[in-house]
Image (tube, rainbow over all chains, first blue to last red; front, side, top):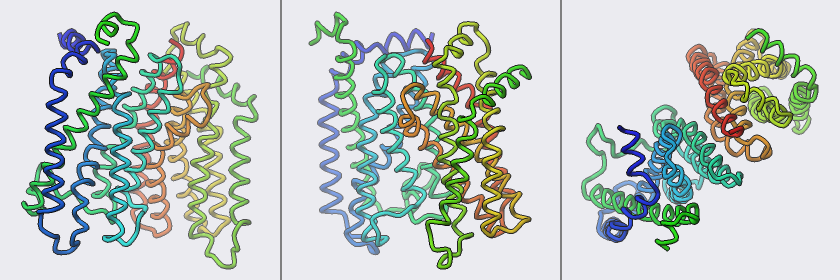
Length: 243
Length: 216
């Protein structure tokens, strides 16, 4: 029953048709929330008592860091679907998400590096969290390279899925690195199980930035996936009709 | 299983370059390092471990680079696949033989060199045990990289498997610090052994699936 459900709703054709209905809403809402969160955070949120204005980079750095890991987790779920149920769409989504993941991980690393100067006095530190995020960035690049190394696309999809599933072991290491090792990087200020340690006047714009970036990335992911699906399925009749 | 072990050991024994090459390179790297710095200015034994760890990482990759490629090229893997033999057993045997003939001697070389560079005699066996478990982990990870990038060159193998090996290096560095400072050795060793044994059991399944994908 699960298998038939998955196959029915996960054909590339259904994906393109369904996402076309809400793509523009997701994109505009995401951009609106992102702009609101950033303007609120950069112009109206109060100055931090210790870090001064330099803390404002959190409105870019924190959402980017969260989605750097979440995108990989999403890819791992898709990889499992591809390996277990042989869902073609799942492989297309992994292939399309990897460049988005690499970009957002680079933004997380770069913004963290900029933040490092006023807070730690250095651009780069071989710290557990930063190093494991750098490893995640290299993994994204590895996944992209692996897929492009094979001319047989189906074989490339399967090998890429195996690598993504194995690489998911890095996600808990990144997440818990600040708790497991003594590190310069601060622990998370927002957790599901505890009350946030950040003031509400800073928390609200941060949450809006996170939601905005999430929706914008979903829209970007849909756009790239759609282009990739059209390229991969170009011989199919529905694509010729669609284009 | 015994037949498989004997068969794989026999095959490796005849591939002189595959097992002797990595060991000689390891010895040369460990000899070259002290020559490249002025030992009178530095306390060599404090950071000699770093070069052992890094050389272990690189040589483990070199050693496993052709673990499946020769069998893939000469058609042996395809034959095993067509005969529907248990791929898991074949992969497990292959990795075990490589660890036995290359990994353990590498660990021995590493611990002997650390002894020669100032580690106390009673701590050298601890270094050997740490390095042995590390090679168990690294050989499994790099065999996976080698299986993924079969016939596509070493660069791809490094790119896909090295990120998985880097957390192991952090753990290995921590284990070596416990030897240097004498605290928490058993805890870190247990963690290293646990990770090693889990990987040794699980990785052959993943590698089998990867090789089957290449052969399908």
